[in-house]
Each structure stands twice: as structure tokens, then as C-alpha cells.
Image (cartoon, rainbow, N blue to C red; front, side):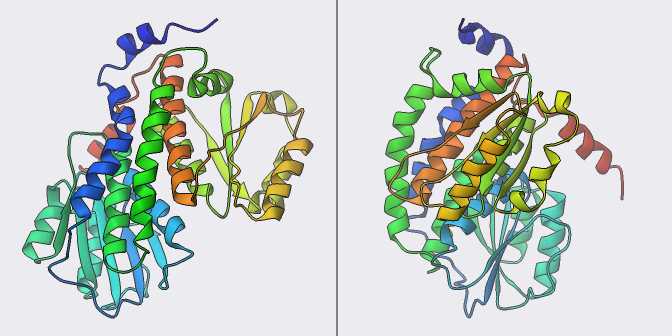
Amino acid sequence: MLKNYSELKKKHDLANMFDAINGFSAQIQDSVSQMKNWSPLNRPENVRNILILGMGGSAIGGDIARVILQSECEVPISVNRSYNIPAWVNEQTLVIASSYSGNTEETLSGLDQCIARNAQIIAMTTGGRVGEIALENKFDVIPMVGGLQPGAALGYSFTLLLMALIKLGFGHHDLIHQLEVAVNKLEVLSKSLKNFDEDNYAINISEKIYESIPVIYGSEDLTWVAALRFRGQLAENSKMMAFHHHIPEHNHNEIEGWNSYPELLKKLSIIWLPDQQDHPRSLARMKISRELLSDLPKSQINITSDGSSPLVRLLLLIHTIDWISYYTALLNETDPTPVIKIMSLKNEMSKIV
């Protein structure tokens, strides 16, 4: 029997995460419009590599951009989730410091080091210390719309970043058209995923993984980033543990972990994220792995998306994932917006000089 999600929403979604997730397509559309006529005041020159500084939702935006551009960008792109930066960063490195709040301490640490290395820097932020540093050093700043949890602002953080890289010549302009196609498809998808009825695909998945620990397997080519996003959203929104890995690496170690403690394995749900353009042998590995593990977990679920390009499919997949994390939060009787442990940890860290 379908639960009363309208009542669950009223009781637990006190900060209205529902509208934030539903607004994903609008975030993308607004960001495309914002960046269509963008031109940096300090155009990067002789770029040999690109470093994206970010944590959490900002870093995921960088991961998506890197995955989408990996087949066409002629310089390597790296995402830096750390206080320190790689030794190769120099004056020929384009650095994009992405921090929604502008006060992410790891990003600020990396930014200081990039300035010391004379890297070419662009900031993406709603303000904070990153905005102040950019103003002091006359760096280009791409403003972001505030008022959201960073994880709920992915439409902004990813699209602004991808548009900047396209405008700087690191991606084909056809990607802008693909973003516009994605917006239309996301609007249609969201209409079906925000209805509290038995045909809602996200609700059906949520009810299957509820009261289990999801283990999410993506592919190395594309959906590993969706698996990473899924794990993070289940933790941040649904307040539950989840794990992720990717094919084919999974087949060289983790698959053997499905042997011991069978009673505990029955508390796990496997979620597979195949893509139609995965390497044929990766798709075969997923199929065989699923068969080998068939009777071990609580359930096994395939989540796929349809679209004319990897970018469209990935955005549709991520949007589906975000809705699943939302409904799972309601089933867990928790508000998806507050991040109490994260804020407590930040408060304790602020006391350490």
C-alpha cells in the first residue's frame, strides 16, 4: 500500500527540499542564460592543465564536467578535494575555485597555494572569503544564486562550470544545445517524479531500498559519477549509509567481498547504473556480476536513463537519483535539508587555529 507522501512531506520536509530538487532544470536553464554572453576579463592563455577546487556538491559539478569533456578536451582536467594541490600546478594551470558558500576551508587552502604558484584563476561562488580573495586579486568571478544547500545547487555549480569551459574553448558548443535538450527532458521527468502516486518510479525505488544499506555500482566510462552522487545524496538527504564502486575495477576486488556474513549481506541492496554507451565488456561484466550475486543481497535494481547524448542521460540519471534520496528521507522520517553533523563538525573545526 502506497504511503501518504503528502503527509510525510508536510511533516518532515520543513525546509522544502521538494522545490529545490524540482528546480534542477530551472537551475540549468538559468545558468545557460547567464553564461551565453560571458567573457572573462582575464582570458586564460597557454593552458596546459585544468584544476577544479571544490568539495561536496561543488566537486561533483567538477566531476560531471570532467566526465563529459574527457572525450574532447585536449588538456587534462582534475578535481581537487583536498587542502593541498598537486605539484604540477603552475602559471599554465587554469584553476576554477568553486565554493557555494565561499568559505569552504579546503578550497580556500588550495586557492592560496594556487595564487602562490601564479596559476590562472576563476572563482565560482555566492560570496564569502572566496569572493573577497577574487576581488582583492582581480580574478574573474562567476556569481552563483544563493539560498540553497550546496548539494541542492548542483544545477548551478555544474552548468556554470561547464559553460565557462565551453566559452574558454575546452568543449564544443554543441554541448550548449545538449543542455537545452536536457532541460526539456528534465521538466518532463520531474513532472512524473514529483507526483505522489504508485507510478512514481523514484518512490518505487525508494521503497525497495528503504531499511537496507544501498551499494551502488556505476561504470568507469560515465555513471561512476552518478554512483558517487547517489551515495552522497543518500547520506546528506536520507541520513543513511550507502557505498559505491565502479565496473570494471569492482570485478578485481570487491566482488569477492560478497562471501562472508550472509545474514548481513541480506541487509544490502545493490543498485546498478549501466549506460547504453558503456564499453561492451563493461556491460557484460555488470550482467555477469549481477547473476553471480543474485541470491545474496536484499534486492538488485537497475536504474537507467534514455537520451541522445551522455550529457543528457547523466543529468536525467542524477535527477532521478536526487528524487530517490528525497523519498527515502521521508520514509526515514527525517528532514532532508538540515545537515546537523556536518555543521557540528564545521563548528568544532573553527575552534582549531
